[in-house]
Image 1 (cartoon, rainbow, N blue to C red):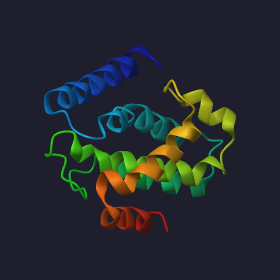
Image 2: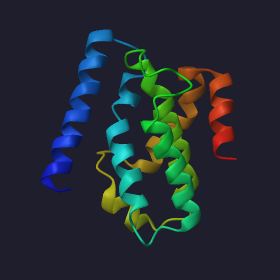
Image 3: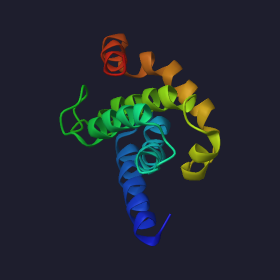
Length: 142
């Protein structure tokens, strides 16, 4: 990660952390994963070793994460990012088997095992955002 990326990454994490501390919402620990996931998605998108099929999935997830129009509005402090985390997790789940683990690990900035995180987010998503929204997220990647 170069210096500019480090500053942006830290800035993004600080904003999320401040919002979570101010609003004390369920799912805060998952929202704190978003900077790591988003960084990974962007880096994988630019890597020539990642298949075009995976890049289409990555493009969908990145577009969703940066879009102001979401299933849960981003104006809802903290909670508005939970659907972004779920979309990123579903995208990563789809591409993990198709992409060399070495490439994924090269860009993963998180401290925990990515596969375990993705599985955990997917498992908890129904409780965090509801089954109706979960079905809509699944449709994005079908």
